[in-house]
Image 1 (spheres, one colour):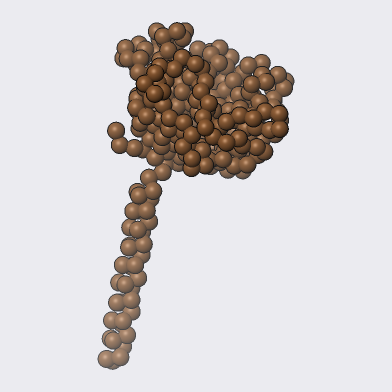
Image 2 (cartoon, helix red, strand yellow):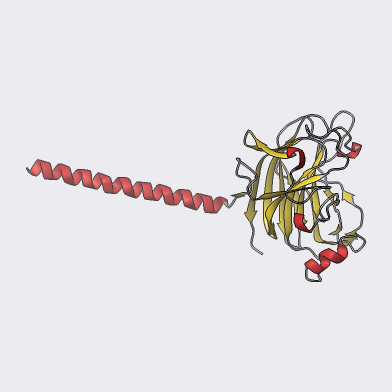
Length: 271
């Protein structure tokens, strides 16, 4: 009888120890997730939480199934286009962000869409501090935003990557307002269809950094609406009369060359 009760106590003790270890493991996992801090904007399954806006179409109309999810990736494709005809598109995440780090893994693939402009060869982008898709005009080419360019090179065309362009906006570099539309980064050239990690660290209206495969290649600050742009009056009113941009949408571009995105994640930062 004593042996029976002793064995029962042993099994009870083992049960307690097992439950304790499981709880510790769960807590460690939660702590790791909190410490890691990355939130997935793309769920790997569908475009839930995202809105498409293509020039010439209403917000939400994904003409030609331009943006689709296949093989766990967001793919930009043009099989249903006879010609691009400047139908540039953007896939907007349905929220606005101010202080954050964005990480995107992408590769530029295949051949350019017929009718796409030459400058759009191996060219796409990540738009930050952007307007909403609903506030865009139906025939507007690009959202007013800051563009982090995703650029490829080949034997004939060599371009730095993660350059900045400013549709409807301006930036400040070295305490000087920059009115040029695009500024080159210091990155190396990227060839072929390799996977590339692009990161953007955004501090509201303060410093914005472009990082490619771990290397910081460009920095600027004070993103702001451009008084010369047709969208200025409308967007400054929506921004409470302030031309300085401290937050906005994030979107992925379709500019005429196929591209895959396998990861889109964000880490909120303190103000």
